[in-house]
Image (cartoon, rainbow over all chains, first blue to last red; front, top):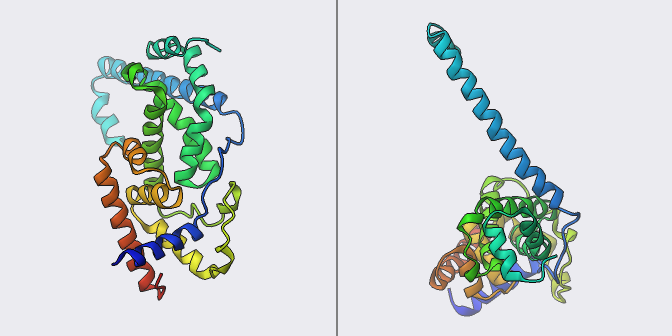
Length: 73
Length: 181
């Protein structure tokens, strides 16, 4: 592939995918979503830990239930 | 808004939420624009800007104020965009969305047949995500190779190699469809 061929392909690409001009802005204020995402992830982690704690507690109180639980997993 | 940028960066590094918000307000537009240039889909760019700042906050303890915030944020944004591109690779992400962001008026634009344009876009979408990012930033957006290398965390030589591979694959794909650029 020579340099002219390569330039031709690049021109085609530029024509098919126009350049983004200027400094575009987000469609809305994204800060509330960032906060929600931070809260969502931390509360999800808290729920996961609580669930895990509950399962460990159940297993300690009713060890015979472990095979039944594993069967239904 | 804080008056001392260095102090804001230090406080952000310690996990201060107000400092993080100040940095978000200062850099969200640049981060959004950078992401939009890679993914070329405004709705996805919104979503990825949120994802990027969430990743930024999560990594606050690893931030080195001496190296500056912008480049670090850009690198995280680039990786978020890469992850997204890999995830939605098979979905249409460019075709209908193109007019939704401000574009340069190219004089030769009208001369190109719609079918060729569409096939070019589709061939471009079939490129692996890491080649697509290098190609769109270097060829379409005409960003310096050094800037792309820093954003991707690779060398300038590696950017050039990705660009070469992208052009070669595109050419083969288009030729297989009867288009000789």
